[in-house]
Length: 293
Image (cartoon, one colour):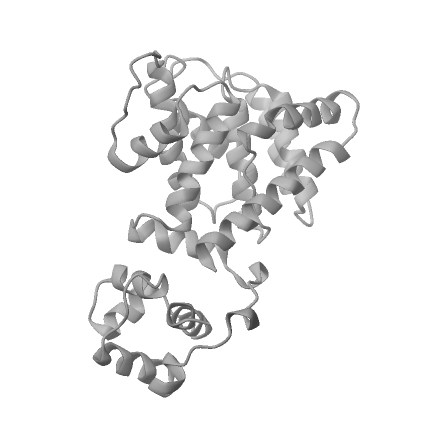
């Protein structure tokens, strides 16, 4: 294990945030992130403070161990805490930053958005968009993409609240703010409240029940557009809230996903959609490992 990984492991074992360690070392929180990412190395003063903080010798701190002995165990990662901590730090290149881009691009594309992945990244990073000179972009697509970033933050900021029809409606309003759909009347609110009442009555929230929640939201057709984007954000939220590895359906898998959704709704055959979501969960677990290993 290299020095960066060791600092990260020791910090987490001591239940400390990067901000807390930064205060002890009298550096910016971003510096701790760079230490843990092996972008820079701490100086001798910082090494001494780190060893004192973690109650080990400097030699124990800097001694490299065989990387093969280190196995990434995602069950030991508090994904929600990591996302919220990185959200607050506002640094590029971490799990939160790349989840924002990955989620917005794929979920919006599934619903027909034409913004490319590169353009999505530009919108998030710089609030600007580049054009290739040949294709026309729908203004609605740009607004929806930018709103998806805001929706993800709203989801994280309100994750400890119990899900309700009003919350789901807020999700939709954030997503559609400034679009041509913004003033459309939401229909079927009573049906949505029935869905939420059923979900909140469950004794235990499982992966399968979260998928069923999505299916029921889709079936309610409560919103005039972009039901799917809101529903997939709800699935991500409920997994995160209930300590289940969340997942993001990729645009390349949308036909399989829609097939699974249709089989679930029309034939009451659940296995195909659940398998698609489990595969997406495996993909996102690898994505998490890429940024947290």
